[in-house]
Image 1 (cartoon, rainbow, N blue to C red):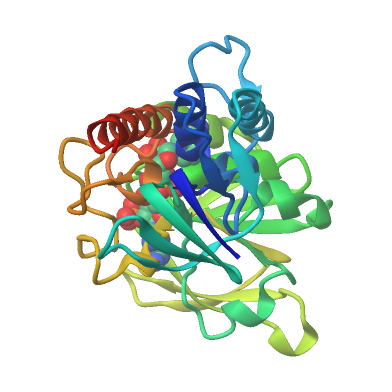
Image 2: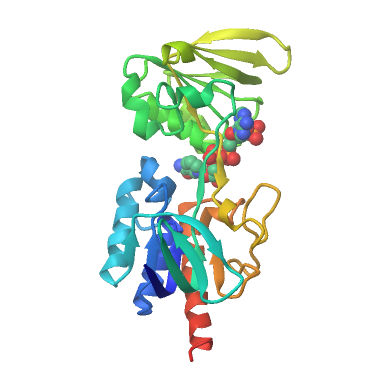
Length: 310
Ligand code: NAP
């Protein structure tokens, strides 16, 4: 099956929904490819307190659901599928989406970023058995247990605070003794009686893959070199994200960490292809900035189509 669309949007997080809303309201009937993580990072978070317009805050999943409904109201079409490969050397661009081919006059890449893993010897074997990158998804399973969160940024603080609802104790393990987290988030964690901090420490492995459950971590103090065994029931990672841009390797410019390079905010080096949100933003990475660049990408796609109308 093959079809040609004015606008195809890859990704259904904050930037993708916003691009969908704007292009739908421009009557371009955008097709949104939802991707592996529908709703993006907001769908895995709890209370969002810094998205303007919600003085009491709003739950992340509710916020993205609202955005989607708003875009659908104006005619955006969502498809549960993911992009496997793309040929951007000709226009319309050729997109392989599952078993289908979609031709796109313009392409908006809003594929976001996915959780980063530590790369421990037994980490992958224990994902879903005590190793997790999503506190809201998996925290409940560790009710009454002790939990470790790795990281020193806002994500780690947020996860740790959320996990105190279930755990008897949460230990934040961070590789340095200064924190990237915002002051307000760090202070909230520091003030919480259930949270303790272990700094200058890295996790070298997680046990016990044989039992299919997390029983302890092998830790190393980076200052003293001391190695220790740390009993715990779960290992949650809050160590940032990696951009989902691999499928454009060789066709679009990327920086050393795989973020898509853009100029004038959302332009890639291919005319008619725009990138927005966390896949191109390593600096701000906020819901509101993702929405902002989603809007810009949509406006540029609209202008491009206007200029190239036959
Ligand atoms: P981040 O700010 O990049 O922090 C990642 C943390 O993980 C850093 O402390 C880093 O350590 C650590 N880390 C990275 N790789 C590691 C590794 N291999 N081993 C051990 N530690 C590792 O990422 P983030 O916390 O996900 O935040 C991303 C953005 O989202 C930020 O702009 C943040 O403000 C925003 N955010 C906001 C909220 C909120 O406002 N409620 C919530 C979540 C996220 P180093 O510090 O040593 O590099």
